[in-house]
Length: 79
Image 1 (cartoon, rainbow, N blue to C red):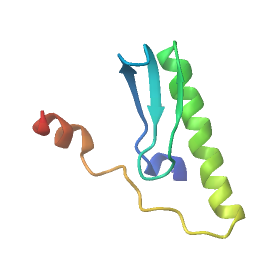
Image 2: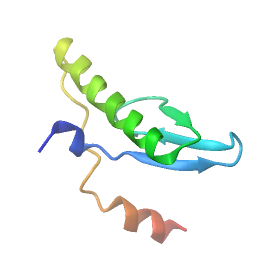
Image 3: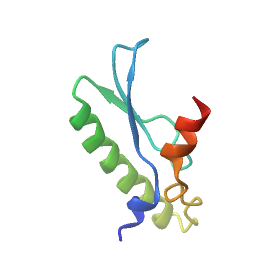
């Protein structure tokens, strides 16, 4: 398993921005955006890989994993 699989990646439509917004909570601040949902996800995956590489280059430990926490069911229960 790649380390990037340990982090939740979210792509959602933003009414305010009128585009898709990608983020990886717990790993990176900010994210990416665009008009094509798949392209935003692909870019987000690349950003996550790059962030992990930067942590390693700096000798810093990776933040705690965010995947595997049943996030989808947790979010749906909150709605």
